[in-house]
Image 1: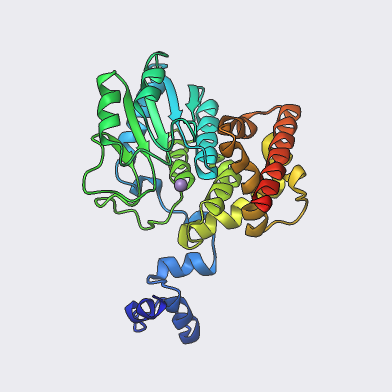
Image 2: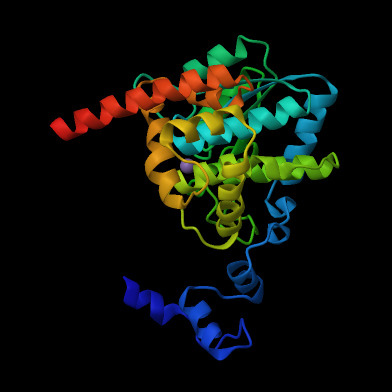
Length: 320
Ligand SMILES: [Mn+2]
């Protein structure tokens, strides 16, 4: 497959004035000066404008309405690391905005991935007005219609491939065929992060960077390509993990033995498996709790529990 890759690359393009660097960049698939800039100098200021995502303006309008009317918002997540971190990012952001927010993570064994009717029944019984999905929803056409019949409004945030038809609701996904966003490779938590970036911009709030630790964990764990905007997220996110003041980040670092140095390896092979242990146990909620609590003791208890369960799991894998 690599051969075809090379053939498709246009070595006549000029993305950098130095010829050697230019061909190196082109061979990596970097096809614009803007992308070359990000590659050579990943800088937070080079993060794309979140409003370039199709429907971002509509999403912000609907959320603003929810905030003004003091509506209840439910985040609908997923049990893998991308879904867990996405949920925690939005939860923390809404908490900061003073929103009445809760979250729902489907059970891996009993419910499986994505939105299901029983979950919608449950959520709609709780006086919820607005549901925001993370890392799922872009193929749930019927379930979204069902939720609307039940009086729920839904905003989808997702990064999975889009079929020709997508649900008839506000939907953020860089892979939408009608979305002009310059980078298609965001993880689910990357899309959630863009929503937070847009909200902070809209309300003129500082500090969206504080979510980069969680975005980096989800992005690395989801095995998306660490190119383009993901490079910026991972570079700053790894630094943020080391200096984080989140109870859960510090607790998981401690059980994973991470102190003053960190790489994508530490996240992929030490942090992510411990979080995935929760999903395996049908207990992914607890991993979200880890990342939204400000109670150091509670965070440490959860981290130790995940650490033990992960050790049990890896023993099982060795035996069979
Ligand atoms: Mn994902």
